[in-house]
Length: 121
Length: 190
Ligand SMILES: Nc1nc2c(ncn2[C@@H]2O[C@H](COP(=O)(O)OP(=O)(O)OP(=O)(O)O)[C@@H](O)[C@H]2O)c(=O)[nH]1
Ligand SMILES: [Mg+2]
Image (cartoon, rainbow over all chains, first blue to last red; front, side, top):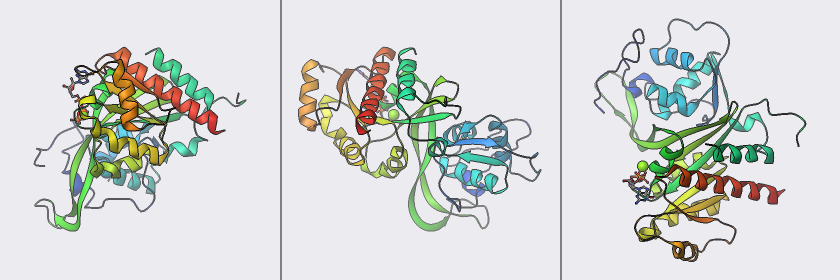
């Protein structure tokens, strides 16, 4: 994994190699975020001492975005993203809502909507 | 009908499984904007310096790419597709992915049918609704469907269908068949 540093945008700075970024940690203290859990920015302006990747996450999550989409947007492995998300949540900067928290298993009406939506693709 | 209309966003998860080179990536790409999602496989528990940065220790991991697709049905209703390698050593990913999954598509190639055995076993054991999509590589025909059903010893209610996942209409039919099957499973469980 000897990729050269990449710049995501002007002020983000170089992306350090992923595991240096999270200092070898592989999981957050709490639960493991589902790949389709929804990440949303909450609360106050972000502190300035965040890693560039964390700033990018906050930017990406102005509108709700899934954990998997965050990983794709930042081009980082899911495990690294989960640690970064855990830190951001511990700092009260984001909320992470797992799909099971938003209600019961998908009901008949929703599945019929999905079927019609797929047919219309 | 629910009196409360779903204001809460709904996110659904569908798995695409099957042996190497069977058409998983093609299927996801035919019906959604596909993007590679990197996930990691832990190879060792021993802390090993991963690079020359001082004091940085990590587990040895290798990155595994998964197919990741998203279909927006409407605002607040999104279906996510995850295409995963069908080998047993990737089951650590499946355990996570199949949790709460709406269902799974197992793609089968009649020339290498045994390749999809682990996937079928897995979803049967987990109770995840699944369909078997027989990809029309050379020579697959109607008979293949019955042969596959017998060879895989599938329950009668498990749909088996022929497909050419390079074609969007065919890929759509596979997905619709799966969600209809999930719906039947759901309603018969109530
Ligand atoms: N003839 C035919 N070829 C197909 C069909 N579906 C996929 N292919 C071809 O088969 C090859 C493998 O397809 P992929 O979608 O990459 O398969 P995969 O399951 O993602 O493969 P791995 O990720 O390597 O396990 C590609 O060259 C496809 O073009 C099909 O329905 N018919
Ligand atoms: Mg593939």
